[in-house]
Image 1 (tube, helix red, strand yellow):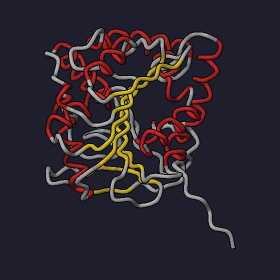
Image 2 (cartoon, rainbow, N blue to C red; image 1 turned 60 degrees about the vertical axis):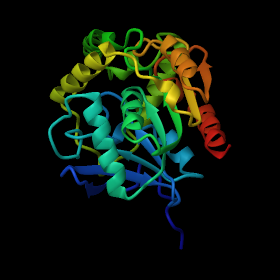
Image 3 (cartoon, rainbow, N blue to C red; image 1 turned 180 degrees about the vertical axis):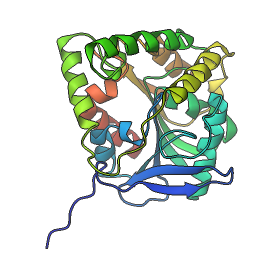
Image 4 (cartoon, helix red, strand yellow; image 1 turned 135 degrees about the vertical axis):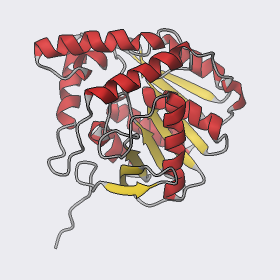
Length: 282
């Protein structure tokens, strides 16, 4: 008798209600551990937007948990109005699961949320990976609104997912990586998450725009190990922000992928998983 391997495409969606009254939808994968990895996703993402290759790769050695933000996908409530509110919700979710210490992989907007989360709970995060993201008030972060709407319009006319343009370069390598990534996101055939509505996108873009204009935070107070990682041609959260983050965080290492955009970790998912596993093991 053979036992079927559980993958990110087949792991069930679970639900937990936090003290703030929000019922969070989440998926967990990998061996149960005292300190799990919590994955914080990007703008307008739901559970189905986490890259299965990254989730499966990390689950070979870690317990990794993804979740829907308030009002997103199958999570209850009304969309959070600010990045700080999203951080409060993230903290409520982690507390509901009963963890006092976590590792985090945060991509794009997830990185904004995680920085606010650390300010709320300075001892919660043990190790952190910040991918395709930047600091509060960082270069070009508030411009993501216009760029997103522009690429959404372009995607509408060319019949592709907006992430094709937003996350990847327009080179042949970038286009190929985009198609492969978008195909991977369709691997889950049953129990798919609730589609993210336009209202959620608008609410999150507004929160990002406001956050992008706010004064920078003092990141020098966080001495935890951090891996900052991005592509060399990130249009959404311009790549100089990654260099800036790595300078501001006292115990950070930086890796920049060549010929890659915002979704560099998805384009180079095999290499990213190796780097991430080594980082968390160190």
